[in-house]
Amino acid sequence: MEGFEEPGFGGSGDLMFDIVPIFIGAVFVIVISVFVIVIVKGISQWNSNNKQPVLSVAAEVVTKRSKVSGGSNDTSASTWYYVTFEVESGDRMEFHVKAQEYGTLVEGDRGTRYLGFERNRQSQSL
Image 1 (tube, helix red, strand yellow):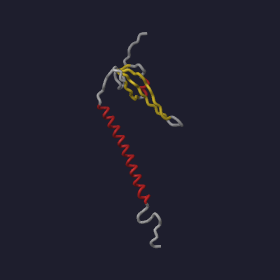
Image 2 (cartoon, rainbow, N blue to C red):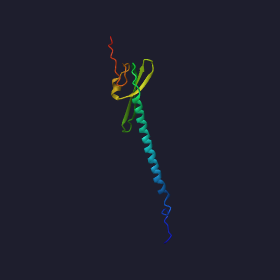
Image 3 (cartoon, helix red, strand yellow):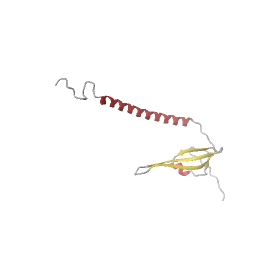
Image 4 (cartoon, helix red, strand yellow):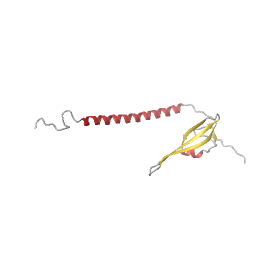
């Protein structure tokens, strides 16, 4: 049976076997590129933050809040903690804080540093 070619196995090859590896390779390159870009942006932001001068001003804790996500249908829940500080000028700044720091701060606390937030303990007369 000379000259007989089975469908899909001719000299030009099957189109699907030519396109699918290219498509999968392109998707792989895109995913890896996005991953690298996110990492580079994160490192750049961290580096930029570390180069900023430390500003020391008196501040007061005016509010605290938390955000919970997940936790339904046997999935784990994640909690993020935020504290809002008000400085002498009246400006407010909200920062993401660790759970331990969130637990130790109380609305009305006053301090001069966010990096650890040093509380000013004042004696109060009754």
